[in-house]
Amino acid sequence: MKALLDELERDYVSFGSSTFKREERSGGIEPDDCFYICHFSAMVGKQRLDLTIDPPPDLAIEVDVTSTTQLQAYRVLGVPELWRFQAGRLRIDILQAGEYVQSDESLVFAGLPLVEVLARFIAMANELGPRVALKSFRQWFQER
Image (cartoon, rainbow, N blue to C red; front, side, top):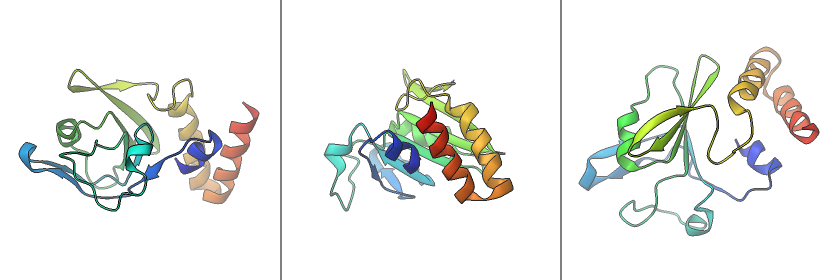
C-alpha cells in the first residue's frame, strides 16, 4: 500500500493496526493497517483519535489468516473502503448506502486493476520474497 501511495505521490497518514471504537454505536475494529488518504490533511499530526469528531479511516486493510473479518463492525463505523486479503487474493468492498458491495475497483485508486495486479505480486512475494516483489511492483507501475 505504501509503495502504491508513494508511486502515486499521494499524501497519507497510516494508523497501522489501531483500535477504532464508537461507544454510542457499540462497534469496534482493529484492522491490520488503515489509511487516511482523502482525509489526510485533517489527520496529519494527530496522536489520538476520537471517532466522535474524527472521520473513520478512508481505507482499512485486513489480512484474514485465522479469522473472518466482520463487515458489520466496519459498516457501523462508516469506513468507506475495506480491502481483505485471503488466500493471496484481494477483495475490495465499498460502502454504498450503508452496505458493503464487492467491487473490482478501488475508490481511492480508481482506474488501477488492483485485484488482478496485487494477486500477481503477492504470489511473487511468496515465491521470491517481498523485496523482489516490491521492486517488480514499482517497475510495473512506472511502465504502465
